[in-house]
Structure formats: C-alpha cells, structure tokens
Length: 382
Image (cartoon, rainbow, N blue to C red; front, top):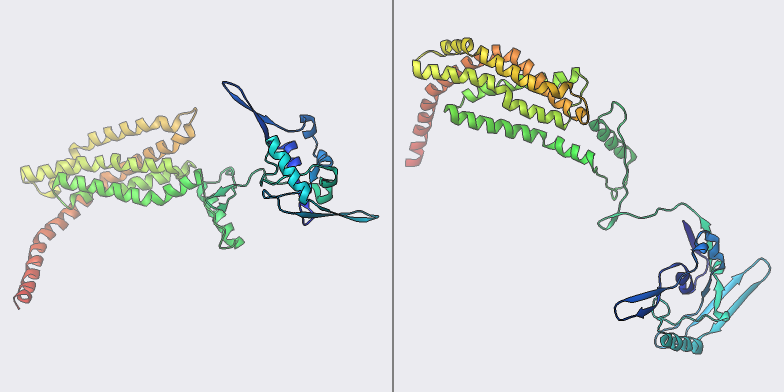
C-alpha cells in the first residue's frame, strides 16, 4: 500500500492521475441493442511497480463553471535553486472549459475545466512525497463508530468461561477510555447468553413440573416430595462431569434439564401408589409408602437401567461430533445412578415429613384464617 503525503498548500488537480489508474468513463458507445462505456487507464504493466507514480504529471490549473478567474502558485524547491511560477489562467481556464464541453467531458470531478498545457503540468513528486508503509486494507464500522475484531482460540485444557473472565480482567486492567466499548461475538457471545439464561431455564422447568404435579395429585406438598429427588440428580451429574474431566457446557446443561423429567419418575411411582393407597384403602401414610417401596422397587430399577443404557452410546461413542454428545450422556448417566442410590431412601422420609406438614396445615390454617376474619370484621364495621 502506498501513501502520498502532500507537501504543498495548493494540491494540483489529480484528474490525470485518476484517469491513469482509476475507472473514469471517457465516452459511451451506443448501438441499437447495447451501450458500452469507454474507460481510460494505463497499460497493466505500469501497475506492477509503485515507482510509476513518480512519472505521473498532474494539472495545477482549475476553473469554475462560470468562467471566473483563478490563479494558482506552484513553488518548487531543490537543493540548488528555488523557483516560483505564477500563471494567471482566466482566459486559458475559460478556453479549456469550452474545449471540454465540446469534447463531451466534464473535466474534474467538481465540474471545473482542467488545462493540460506544458505550463500548467507538474510532476506528482513535486507536490507529494511517496513512501511504503503498512496500512489496513479496509476500515470496519459498527453503526457510526470505528470497530475492530480480535479473534482468539482456546488453549488446550482451557474453557470458554476462563477465557471470557481473563479478557474482562485485562480490559479492566488496561483502563481503556470510556469511549471505547468491547463486547463478545460468535461463540463467546452465545456462551454468555446461555450462561445468563441458565438459572431462568431451570426455575421455569421446576415451576412447570410443580404446577403439573400439583394439579395431578390435588396437593401442595406432594409435588415437593417429587421435586426433592432433583438435587441429588444435579449433584450426580456435576460429580460425573468432574471425575471424567468434562466441562459443564451448554450440552451438559441440556442433560441436566433432561434429568428433571427423567429422575422424578422414581418419586412419581412411589408417591402415586402411596396416595392411591391412602385415599382408596384408608391406610396411614407410613403403611402406604412402605407398601409402595416394596411393590415399586422392581419397576424403578428397570426404568432407571433402561434410561442409563439409552445414554451409554453417547458416552462411549466415537466419530464425528462425539466430543459434543459425550457431556450429555455423562450428565444423564451420572445423575441417574447417583439419584437412584439416594432417592430409594430419601423419598419415603420426605413423603412422611411433608404428609405431617400437610396435616398440620389443614388443622392450623382454617383457625388462622378465621382469626384474621374476626380481627378484620370490627375494623370494617367501625
């Protein structure tokens, strides 16, 4: 890339330079079907070397469309002498304007006439200096602001969360001006978006499960018994990912959300059978959940093994995209196995305690609301 630095206050008209290297249309050839533009430029052999610019001559004259007088002064300085050439171009400018109009050209890009006589032409090197330098091929913008994109790759063993944290720390350490703003794009932006939405997704999934189970069992406390199995599944999934050296990425998060729907089937089998025994056979909560544990142990084990075997190919599979699917299978299998060991013991205990809480609420809440109604009634009457 070649940059030209102007060393004169009065820059000559660069029409000739643009005609040589640009894409100026000199004329148009018309035929009955098409039209063809005639473009002037130098031969391609002169484009190979930037030194050809030293041989380019440009015009120092310029006129206006109204033919007003304009005078240009060119000062050429050398090691031996300094000469000053002053030319008044009132008549010459008007004559050039008429000639350009007759020739069908528009002169300079501003509409002024350009003189190409020997008295008004100077080498480009007189009014500019040429030097080689490194310059950007293009300047990117985002809106009205200049923008630059810095790309990076993750080192071996590094995670996207570590990379974004280090970059944010470096930006804060550099103390960039307030007018400079930076944000992530591409994969890093997707990671930040997914990381910020993770708590909302998990809470929404738990809320949907609670509403469905509450409507199914017509109870406020028994859905909590079923949801009590989910923390053990989450701990098991995270523990399995840690032991096998996998990151908790977006795919692992999807596996954790899938566990919300898979793991609770153990508690559903127990709670559904226990509630049916209490309502239809007038059995106590203790006897009902004990019978459920005895009769539902085999179905629980069969469904858990079937789900774990379905996720096994994701863990041991190879081939294209296997590294993307592996965290999903590890999260599912780890959550299933860990929760299976715990929920067989914790679910009956939670069921009994929450059943007692429900009975206490049914006894206390009516009296509580009745006391509030009696306290509010005199205030209304007064």
